[in-house]
Length: 633
Image (cartoon, rainbow, N blue to C red; front, side, top):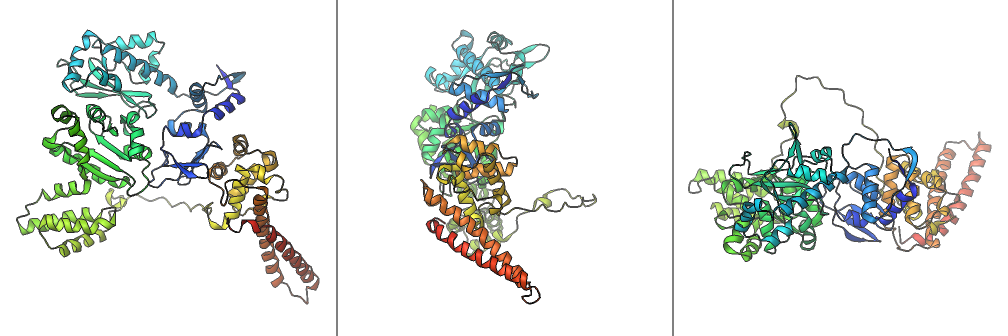
């Protein structure tokens, strides 16, 4: 069993793997000032970016959900890897030779084949399938592509291949490339019956890739009439690296254009994605073997940098038939997950982008997207089509049904415009529509409990007492504590030995007390340099996860008032912190003094009075030293 990876090699991996480069493969980052980058958090759903990355400190922190750490912890979290797997993956990518210490074995976890091996198996399979597309047995597959307007260059661009009809061709090829049967089965490429056999046989296959280009699965289309599996499409089953609810076909090709244009086009199939990209619509993606869901929406938002109510647009293309309309209405139900404006593009005669490209050319595909219509308008048309608007009762019913949709519009500035449009579409007075919309808006949404089966007969467990909640680290009461600790974490050289008399008792927030204790354990600010090693060392001293998270948070948030703090700037915060400590001591002494009888307890009273005078003098000196941060705080 291999020994533990040497610490200096791990440190080299951390140094060479730029955290902004790695995270950019998962999140669209934008400059946020103070040397930090910002984007939408990949660990929780959010509409406003609160995920911060500080390349100089090699830290990330989300101010929304609290997740934070370094480049290694990010990949462990986002891809579900072990520490060793993550280090090995980064070392391979950035050219770091890993050495191991003999006799110091790392505990093994029963996780199955490592992710890197599953990725390698898919890479080998994709190359094999692509080569097979040129063989005589793949004539029907090439004809299928040709009939849909895709030539060899298009097939190569999208990595399209052919799975031989023989049942073990890929299995043998994987074995020859030293991919074990266990790894092939775990990857979803090979199935196990009485013997091992290829999962995809006699089908045209599309590689499904992550945003970074790694193949993690395949979609396979039936092309032979005698295929015993009648399903039109087969997709890779759920594996350790392939989760269909999180995967979008074409995201590897679309991600850059999505970021640049703030637009995403969601189509229904692999050939539709190909047709769009070849027609110049470079933002097209498709879900893989499942309906477009909220997890897919999160992926889109991360890469679009969807930062506001008009931060971009998501365009869905649907067939004009009833199934397409039903799909659009399903998207409408989850539209609130988008901060972008949501649109629908329906081609004439219900053609999908692939058919449209074949029959009317690439310009028609671009025009389809350009002529998109708001999803709410498309939905209104579908609602009103259910009613006979020539009858008074039909108009009343249509109005009541459509009013709920208008009331739910996220951009409230558009409600009145939609109300006017609805009045025109139904043929009623606009005041009647406004009244119905107000009534619909006032109806309470059904509570989760009301949608569940009643369990009144079941005894309820006694509720646990609520755990005390610590105040927010961003509470203005802790501003000085926070700013000083940011200086200590990011610019220890500016602080130096000015904190000699600072103790954990100077911090009133328990988490900040823990941060100072970690700083002290790391040798204090005088032991640090303005580099990644110092902040990583401090974080390593934290035993409380909340303290570790706070350190990453403090490491990515810009210091208020300056981007290049001087020792004079830093010492002012030290004085201000100690002034606040002195003020608390003064308040304590005054409280005791008020409870003391100056006649009966004259000795104690005079002692406390003298102490109060000295504390007031000390506070004045500290306040004079803290003058430099008046504008910063």
